[in-house]
Image (cartoon, rainbow, N blue to C red; front, side, top):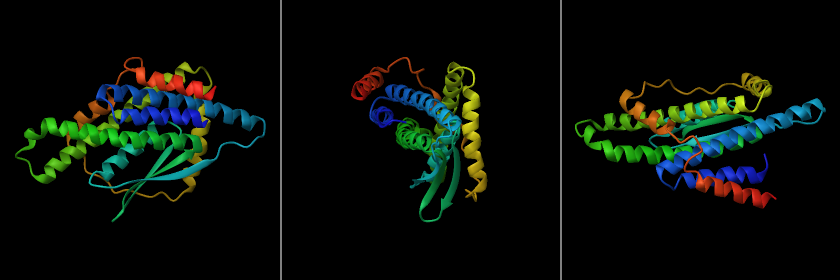
Length: 248
């Protein structure tokens, strides 16, 4: 992936972190769609290189650390998003006194995109949770502190599930639109990543208790509900146009 394309995605996600919820949803989904399209483009380039006997993109493993009270919730979200992108594999681990670690295994360009997206969604999830908590805090006035924390945790976990469901939906649509043979190309790419993961000693994260059902459902809606990418994208399209001009 060219630096100009990665920069465009980064700009969209950065703007999504500091705008209205509606525009943030639209910008994030648009960025996700671009990631998926660029991933297909890179997979096809790699396939052509393989047929010509040329070197292909390298498979790497990168680490993303989450800290704070909601570290495990955010790491779980990162793992869901990583898997939903289709050609990456997440490995997860808790480290006492340090935080929660997400290992992202995949082709270098895919991993770079995933890290950008996860970092942005981490900010958006926390913003959405705090807004939801301000509106719903009176409902928990008789709850214990641990119950309140569990409610906020459930929202974040649901946000991750909703965001990853949206990514899978968009991925299916984009693969279908890309034409025949695309799924086979991506499957081959995914199989190569799986082979690398199978050779690794898998870090393990502790099994978690189920999230609070009510707050989880609220989080799912917050993470999933987004425009189709066709509305409220003035800022995103302006960024895309500007990037195209820079690249020209």
